[in-house]
Image (cartoon, rainbow, N blue to C red; front, top):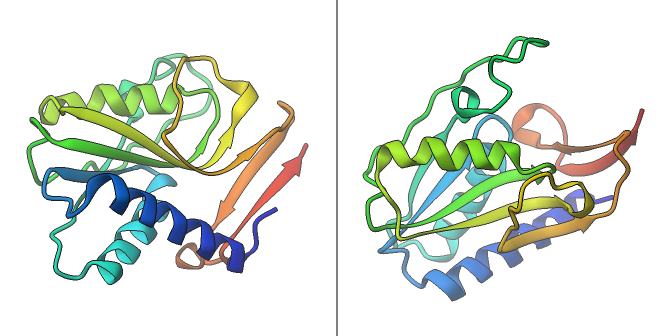
Length: 174
């Protein structure tokens, strides 16, 4: 679906879209969603810092586990990961980054968790993969790497070198 070369081009394009909309990032922070969105967010932040080395790009991570609407519904055990937001979000523009947007429930939980760190001026969503026709909540990304039409029995897997694989995105059927 997306190989390493194309993934690099997509990340580059997303970075330049951010620069176009946020200039020097003086009023903007980037928040990566645990667990998989942080790998995309780290790539974005690293690339932005290489393009604009003189800008102070603030980066944090959030774990939406305890804000999920299915937190106590049983089933599989949820594993909480650290939230690290070393700055106040009050009056900031936030770019929230996740790897795949599916139902929108994880993003909703992340938005709720962010409010504990202040009320941002605005929140923009960036996703690498938008599974367009599966939304359960009215959540839409502003920045999209690639849109995918898929069935419910399919899974989008984003793989990274940093995570022991190779940089690529694949669509897997059950």
